[in-house]
Length: 483
Image (cartoon, rainbow, N blue to C red; front, side):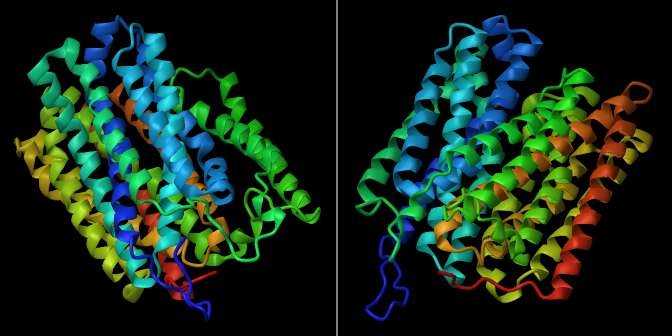
């Protein structure tokens, strides 16, 4: 933990930037592991004689366990120490990458992917909590900017790296190495964490009481079941009508969890999530903005890849390359936004959302002109660049602002709540927007389906912008030190 002076003032930990480097290495590994699989699914299908359902669960199993454990993992880090939980998460991700790379059949691969999601769900909220713990003020914004840059680069590199590995090694061994490539990165992250993380790695708090070390297992189980029920219908594409009854069941479990958390706190115990956090406007509004934004923009890259490959008959590598400049611009804008968020606050969010609208509308125009007058699809490099720039200007500063007033003792679980909102938004947006696009495709062409999907995304971004403008006019507090 960052030391304090004799007067109780914050004193920066001299090793905080090395700690950040370790966090970024692990986040890079986990995100490359997510994005790289999208371009090797055909090779996996051939190599393991996998069915469409098997391939779907290779994606779904990871998404489910990742989303389900986020909040509980964040709280566990707050209680037992973020460093040890981070190392456990990296170790699980690394070992499951070995298991996935050596999988003899689809069932083994899917089990490994479930464990991968668990490992990623453990390490991600610890990274957020440790940035909150070791950085303050403008430095915290820069740390989140660096995190956003790594996110942008890893998402961009994943599909390209997967395509190159397949091209160099062939489909048979190639898809296995897209998992095994995580192993040396994970080993390096664990070694550096053991070397550079402070001792003890627990998160001590002055005057901490026994209730502060309460994990709230009932709350963890209730919230985990609620997230499972809410996420499963969206990520399971073959869910029948009866399966959608899980959504109201999930909402009921969520209400039961809220009741339990209040009751638990009234009994003098420390709940998994202090519900008073949602009375902090910066946290509640920021979580809403994150969910709405991810509900819209996440579908962009899926629609682009499908349009380029299925609609135009281009290769997977071309589909990856067309989004590469956008991802790199996301890294640059994220770093810039992190440096300026303490001065500009929510103005950066509004500007970023405006950039996203420009990119979305411009992409619709490019696709329409490609169909009507033969305009090159590579003009999407320009329009998608606006969306990539928006990614860095929205996600990074919103994360900084959302967590700016969260007490350090709940920073891990609060970060888990924020990321859970992002996952719920992502799952719902992908299901609805791509579902509508496929419905349109049944009676029209890819140009129309793409345009309808992007129009829906534009509407969702405009709703997000209205919330951000309202919040800006109300004067959301800028980041400041909280205990």
